[in-house]
Amino acid sequence: MKRKLKFKKTSSILLVIMAVFFGYNKWVFSWGLFDLFTDQTFTQEGLEKVKEFNPETDILYLPGLGGKDIFQASKDLSITRKKEIRKFIYLYLTTGREYIKASICRSYDYMDIIQEILKEYPDIPSEIAVLPLLESGFNPMAVSKSNAIGLWQFLNNTSVYFGLKHDKWVEERRDIDKSTRAACDHLRHLYNTFGSWDLALAAYNGGGGQIKRAMDKTGASDIWELKKTGVLTKETEEYVPRYIALLIIYSNQKLFGLEKEIAKPEKEDTTLIKLEYAVDINEVSKHLEVPICTIKKYNPELNRNITPLTVEDYSLRLPVKAAKDFEKKSSLLYKKNIKSVKRYTVKPGDTVSSIALNHKRNTSLLIKFNDLKKPYIIRPGQTLYIPQ
Image 1 (cartoon, one colour):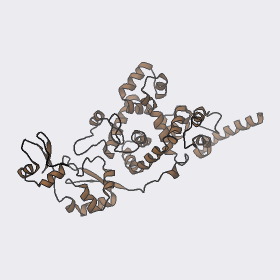
Image 2: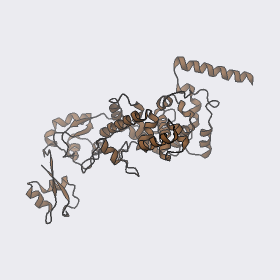
Image 3: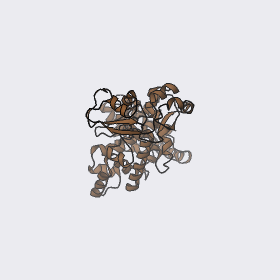
Image 4: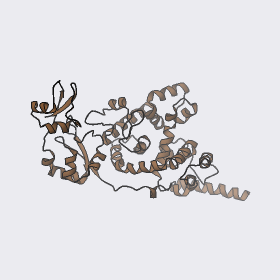
């Protein structure tokens, strides 16, 4: 027995030396950890096994937490020493497995765009690109119970503060580029306020006020201490552990056995083009031979099939090939040459045709631009948009 213990201790020392000199290798050192998460169906027994796991005795080697931040500790998996992280990894890989697979699949449509934008924010960890996995499942059309919208789940007040518009034409909380920049600005502000990413992320979910009040009341200085005090809402208390669990899953899909289960879509490079005039995306689809669903996928902020008439130099995101063809066919796409819009308040006795006649516009164009499902029914006080 003593010889076995001595051998184990000697082996552990050798592994630590190898980790120091040759780098930490998740394949070699953490196979015992990934063995915990082979279940695809939830069982209470499986969950208890994960929660009772002892990093000191049940695994060949797992780095210590030391003074690492959440991203360093996620990268070398030392953060899985925390029971709540292991719990959420298990839950996501069992009860949430189908949802996670679908969300990861959707992420490939937007991840390149998000990562490119993050390069503009060198002070923000690149791992933040995975945050929409928790917020929205990488679905820009997602709407929460509290009416938070988009990939980054912005509430109305916060979105206005960070310059995201929403009107009859666009909902910029769904705009991939603009909402990502707004999220980066928001997270940067929260990090500068609280001085750590775990608290910044908790504040992103629960609001800076909740975190500051909790810290003032308890004297706690990180999310793990705050969790112990029980002063946070359950959602905010679980937010960072859930995010870290998803980050670890996303970064280690092969090791968790997910890679073969996810049908990764074919990579599609896209770019933004600035428009001189508004365009009908149905016409764009027709003349550039791009499926309408593709245009809507990369421009989910559009509330109608026509790009905003109220925005100068509006940018439309298209596949690279289509973007190159756009200039060649611009005469077809800009044929209406509409560059602005006038608001008109319907008066008693007005009809769509009389309004169109008075403004020297085509009636069908007016119907189309105002998306009038029943053009024969308009009411006094209703606002119509007259293309100029």
